Figure 1 (spheres, each protein chain N blue to C red):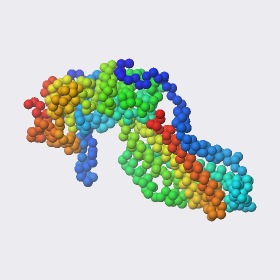
Figure 2 (cartoon, each protein chain N blue to C red):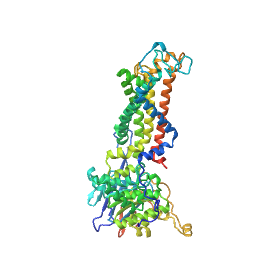
Figure 3 (tube, each protein chain N blue to C red):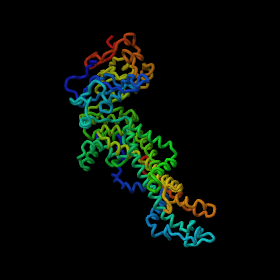
Figure 4 (cartoon, each protein chain N blue to C red):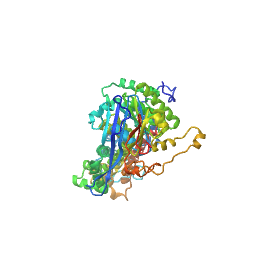
Length: 302
Length: 336
């Protein structure tokens, strides 16, 4: 053609676009920590789905004859109860397996609720600015001034204890983080020329908000959301520990910790295993979040 | 102000008369009813652009070039005066009416990389104006059109699925040009399109723009602070200072016989390719900084830095007046 000068990457064959998922996996799998996180999450997920098949005992089945049996490798342990039993003789392994159902759904539900609400509020605040922004952000500031667990306790106290109310409380408590992150990135993106270019091309508000600005905010949101799942699991466990979340006898990991805290000195296994499950799951989600960010950011692509 | 446009022979494609762009920058006092302070970014600029013509707008940073450009595409509100594009005033168009105009006026930006959405492929970026303005168009038609303009600006179609960060500044600017071209506009506003590029790439992009202008009959409003670039591409030039027109003339007239002291100072700062000449030439350095457009000097806005200024310049505001055919100058001293 008549355009002078460089012909970019001349001579290369026309690249067919790699399938987006395939491309994503290429970047994601090069991060070993993220793959480890993903493997653990998949295992926990399978455990939750097939709890009925895997668990050696029913989670609520009590047997006071074997109360506080230690794990099988200790003196007095038996392979019937691999990880031992709690104070009223329930199998800890079975309860942990059933508990993964609760913890995973808490994480997912809480994060879904707060991400959707937070992104919409943050987009509105960052895009329209003015009075709307002031109103939204001041409410969020007020929520942030109250210690998060205290606020969750207040909300649960108003709504009444229970798993659903605890999830709503945790979702409300973490909401300001999503609103603030979204608003800040939206404002930063709005000042860039590509948004101006979209306006000049005639793109409407909705298109600019959702197909130009929002995709450029996703890397931060994905990291925050995957970290948020772990925070939600932790917060819900804390509420359960305080007796305001899932109610006994449901095998939620935080509630299990609370039930057995008086036996900490006598039977280490009753608190260690639920605590380890929380730790491993939370760590797995954090690793996954990091890997997702690296894989989804086009600037890091090679 | 009754400044005369450069040409009045036939109805121009874009006719700007006494255009003003102002920004509200806080209040004069602390009280909420104190009168607002106005920043006059563009204060009465007039020019016209015909089809297939290039108008260069030059001036140093902060003289209102970009505010003017953004007003012409509806990004800044027009505070006064008129901008008439193909017989249609751009001053008070509704959203729907702007949509119609957008297909005819497109824009090229200064920073090539930041003007491209980092999460879209080159193909999607170029296709966007088409998808927005002609939602009924089929996928195949759109991609055929995208490949056509990519070829036109010198991009091979095998890069269609790449992302902007994989390209150099010059290539990104080609993508920006392709995006502006795809809706077949009549006028492209170029807001310093080459000032972020290397000099060797500048030449390629400018030659591309000139080539496209010739073949597609485009009109360009070319904003720059580099006079050498403007001399190469523009048919006529408007020199701006602090939101006002200092001098307007056809390019060769302006470069051969600048009448305004500001224009002379700008021209003397252009480096010469011959080192011998460059060493011996007298550079007229302007003292001080550009004054604040919130509080411009009385009379001629350039008088605080002008070597020829005297008391008369502070007393009265010089009007843009014809000194020769098509050559307008706003300076009291230009005629003496």
